[in-house]
Image (tube, rainbow, N blue to C red; front, side, top):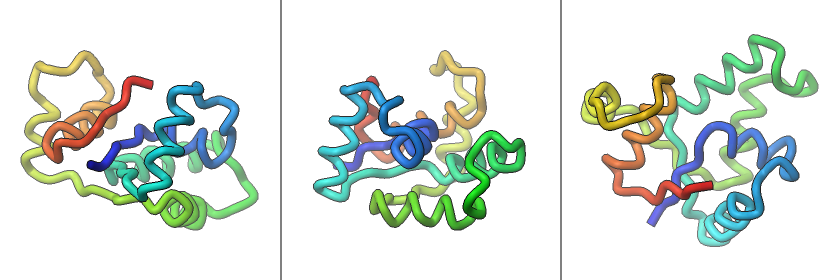
Length: 117
């Protein structure tokens, strides 16, 4: 079974592993060993926006940064489908941020583990 990563998990794992909680670090390490990590493609949109805003590293281009994460983590990148987009607008989520709603919907629709970091 795949485990979905939120955007901040991807960034912390790449740039500041010490910012991951021990529970998050363990979940990522376990899933790395089995190549069972996934993310929603919306996470790359969020990362691109952070690059544009100057909030992430400037020693590597945004595209390379995202490719590096994808390869290093053997990520399964899952697309936002019509079903996921529709679910993200339902009143079942506490998050207001569209990206968080899409990530959660991706996990539900694909029946992924969504660890409580």
